[in-house]
Image (cartoon, rainbow over all chains, first blue to last red; front, top):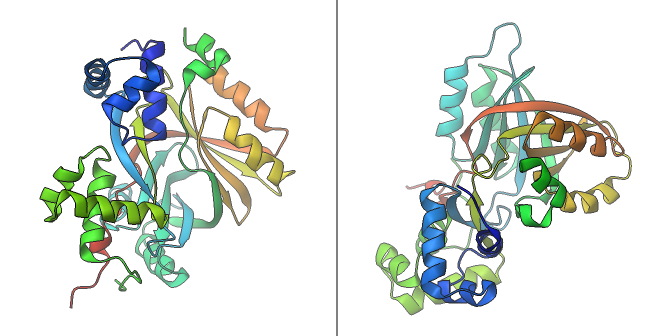
Length: 158
Length: 157
């Protein structure tokens, strides 16, 4: 799907505040409310917009410890299916990436305490070699993608 | 699983769950799902926003669909030179989707989305002034920012 400048303007607004009304987005980008709705519908159908998400503060809801854990395959210990199954089944595992190279999987865990983190890691430790790092802070947790504002990126893509 | 310390009641938790699933739901629709009137939902949502429990609402864009099909995790290694400077600078690098400052042998983990290998190379060159990097390509993402259902954390006894 080819996105024009107006589509990007809408995407910018929605990445910044996904709860804006069609009318308000329209005011900001210079379109009528039904025109905004139609463009959003097209971008949703083309899966350019995958979802609209509320971003919650993990610390404020009682999950103050965040770790990034690398799951490595050492001496054929790693069981891919099992690792995937465990990652899916533990609610504190919020991201899981299957990667190339020495690390087979990289997961992000949000835990209630260091003890809670230890319990979670223990589930994986029979199936992979683990290296965990505690996150001190996340300077970028959610980034607004705006190709219109990045001329060199636009050149690469065109 | 331990009981989560929280002053959110079961209805707040249900509202948080709905908004993580679809942030554009109307107050009326959320109300129908959690069994509240529309003004009652609105009041609770505002409280959750004011308390900083809801940090914001974002559209999630598929980077594949907009011409950034390659995703990688970049580990910035060793003691990061100028880590404060980097934390500022990283905000303005459009290819960086996530950046986490970590304790341990690596200092930053970045998730980047790029258009091509030369594009990745250019990006890595620009990061090199801060630290040595190690890059791993992402094959698939079995889990991408799971929704946190707080009610699942609460021990039912």
